[in-house]
Image (cartoon, rainbow over all chains, first blue to last red; front, side, top):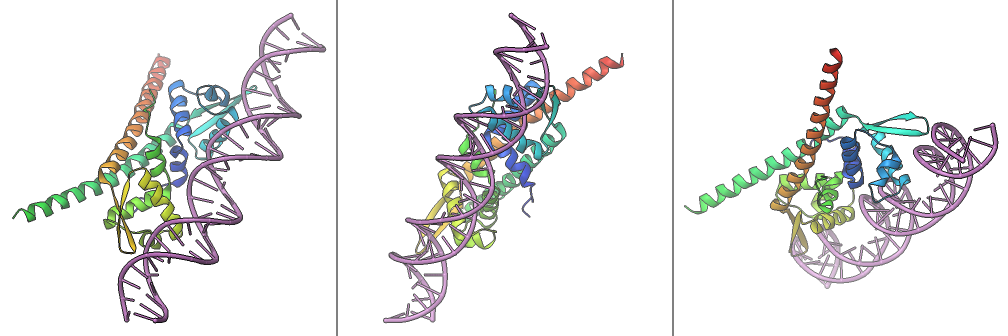
Length: 112
Length: 112
DNA sequence: CAAGACAAGCAACCAAAGGTTGCGCATCTT
DNA sequence: AAGATGCGCAACCTTTGGTTGCTTGTCTTG
């Protein structure tokens, strides 16, 4: 079985810029396209598009306030994403260990 | 601190097709562009390109044999990738829990 | 309160990535 | 020798991440 991961979530956190955005939003407790772009190597517009992607994936939500648009992380959804990350990691890990065990078994049988 | 992840590794495993390819290669112990594409919703050429990406990321290696080109997973490198996955997961997890603790503290202070 | 500053949204445009088809070349197989 | 099979290459299309330029809406302040 191949885990049937929610690809939208994955691709949302698959982008390095978006990961850094999430990091910042978590560290600072929120931010706008403008404040985020100040710490990133891309323009405000690019950040805005990324925020759109994260929003559609449900990882962040926006609270308009005056001329600003404050984003914050949806913790529950990010927790889900983290869970999926570790699920995939665990799957591969298990397979790697199984292979390692088999390899060792083969080696042992050849030492006979 | 922002983990300074190896972006090439991440983007390699960030693609859903490539994840499925790795899954298959692990499950079957190896495969060619042709055999892989048989189980994927894309053409052999697309798979070949993905194999190129995985190869450059060091996640797979090829062994040409006659007219075939057999790929297998580089276990050590995939183990590294898995480690990075869980590192990011752990970072976010820690932040989420910190936030949760703070939120609870605030709530307690308001119950006073 | 009018004027400038600041945040965001929109649109056009560009480059890179993922995908396709169509081909040609090498290697098995019969 | 002839057909089948596996691969690589090239041209092309679409999506995605990025940019610049401009407009609109909301403070701020002289």
